[in-house]
Image (cartoon, rainbow, N blue to C red; front, top):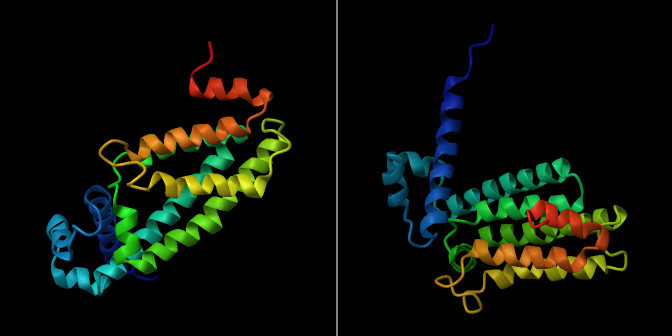
Length: 213
């Protein structure tokens, strides 16, 4: 009978705890303003423990982003499977996005681009590989279900909607003190949905949004 590897389980738990704690700090305060000392203090761990797992802050940021994107992808895949149809899928994602972006520091993506390019590259690949593919798949699903307009140019419309992510993150266009990211993403997602929906899908959309009379 094998003895459980308790040491391995404990170290995995420590690493996960560091990643979760760092993610919460980054999301709330931004990346630049959070130091490695802040993370050790918040988690009540030693610097030795932190640096055992992550040699530099850059390595930590990249690990946090990779883990967060993997979790996000799992959530989106689950919603696509659970959705009754393409319209329902977007509405589910809108509700999820509202919660996901409620407390995100407005400068986190610009800070990542400027100070942690490897992590930013991961985000860019996620956008163009996963998010773009998800939008295209949803558009084709909606057309096949008769809920979206059949004449939609799927590749163009998908890239237009993808571009709204960068637009929403532009601090000059949407100053964070005036516009929250969650608010802007909600408006752009609903505008996208209404731009592609066919008459057959409109009643569904109103019902899902709770707007039906």
